[in-house]
Image (cartoon, rainbow, N blue to C red):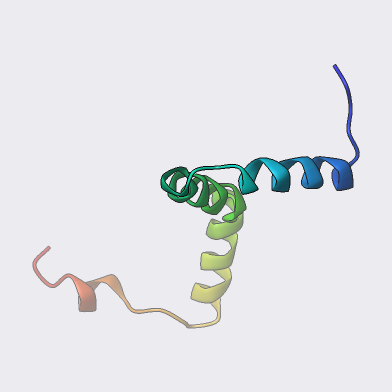
Length: 66
């Protein structure tokens, strides 16, 4: 297995993206969006901090039917 530097790998990925057909770009964009979102643990941590800071809406105000 050949190990590439991050810079070389980025260059190779950019070349490959430039060769993709337009209809494949949407799939790639979705996958990149998935890869760049924060992890579940980071999202939970952010939510807990927001709740502790008094941000957000109580669930009963959003769902009064439960």
